[in-house]
Image (cartoon, rainbow, N blue to C red; front, side):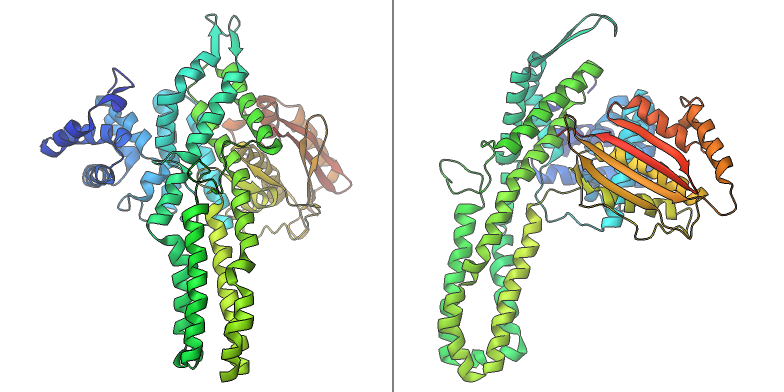
Length: 556
């Protein structure tokens, strides 16, 4: 497993599966199933691995995956790495014996990232652990469940990138020199642009891991038809108050006619619209190969970010997450057309003319008041189902995070209130618009916000509001500006508070992460020193208030 990184891509699936089935040795079976998990698309192989991994972890390592990989890292380090790679949040979601609750999943994954950081001595994995915990905190506030949304298997997509795109990536990115001072980096943006467009096309169209696979499963499993037809019809027909209608033959005939027309429209959507655009499906709603100005700007940002990452690290190791992130950004733009289609479809789908001219007259002859209620309930049921279904075509925050700045603020408040329970920032948001952020960039904003909010809670007047304003400032470089002001505690002297703040601003900040008390401003300065896209513009006392201004450079 350690001699070649290509082993999981080259093993014969059938032979390995047979060997795993026949093996009596637990370790050998685990190795074979781990190799299969990276190559096989058979759910049974995945199930057998999860069952074996759960048994070993529970019986020998106190139900802790971190304890398991720590044990294997001494005798079988590559086996431990394979387990780390396999145990994604998607995989853990199905490992119910080890992660019985939804909230267990991000904590286990974050702990595995922390183990990997120690194992490789690479702080990058600590950042990933922090990112997972931030996302969990945000989702706790948002209370959002992504089980029914568009999904792309990140592990299989990563394998596809490594198999199909790595040659082009390596040809586009090259370096010469033996040390950091002497390294010269070359980035071919034309080839990188081609890599991203081809990756995004596979991201949408691949029948195994792509969005097309998700939509296909929805169609084959009847979820869309069941949602848009069966559940609505059954709900109406089972309603006790409408049974008087379903005893009337004239009404039943008209109702059956409306149902047939409605069903044919739903079937047409399934057959022609819920597809990625192609020669065989020219009416497909997803068009990954079409690039409007908005998608082109995202593509340009992706190429720029890949080049920037390679220039800083002189490595292609961390590029897959960047490509995945930008594929989701492109997908979100394409998914707007899907959502718009269903919104414009509501009127024609209901077939209002038939209801008014054919169905309602018969129903009104039975009961005028009940006929109006029938119409209202039918149309409302369709509207509600479409509204729910629109959520299917939004990207899941668990794999491609998106959050508004106000939501990030609320998440930091929730985290701070775990310690300072009486903290209440109050409704003092003076922003003029809701600002949405996508990608892992918002982790930077969360971290900096958390410091300011925590300081306000610990040292401010808890009876007064925490005033804030979030805004986008256009220009050659577009920036997000966050302004916050908190009132100084009545027992504190503003002059002394100002002096303390100035002392902290002038102090060394390099070791800020090594201590906790009075480290907030130092941590902000350290963050600003390590990130070119973040600036601490202001942290000062004005009157009896502490004013803070944070500035973030946005990619596009």
